[in-house]
Image (cartoon, rainbow, N blue to C red; front, side, top):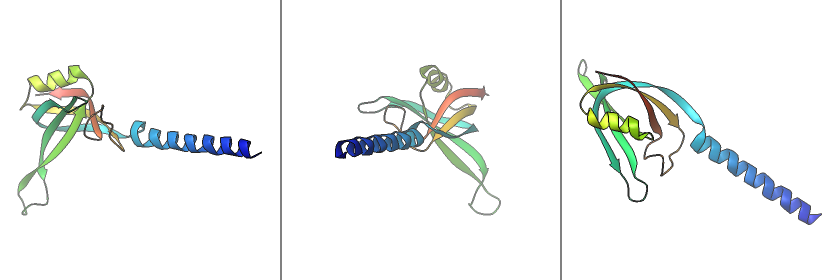
Length: 122
């Protein structure tokens, strides 16, 4: 009887850990499109080389009244073809489709925002 209880307990723990991992790292929490000037697109990392980028968005922020401030959107890219398009066109205005996850994985990138498509480029 104790052996059966032990296996059931181990099974429940493994199931709960699996659900936690799925929710934290694989579940797409949100997705959308961000627009702005591409500041940089780089490949970096010690063990896992990942593609990273930053988009500068203009808008009205919490600066002085009536001033224009910028917002930074840092993101990671999984697809090498999308990265190549970004890298070759730094400084242009992009509309980027992204997916937001609750956590990061070292081989997926340094941010929880993963760009998967260039919607528009000007």
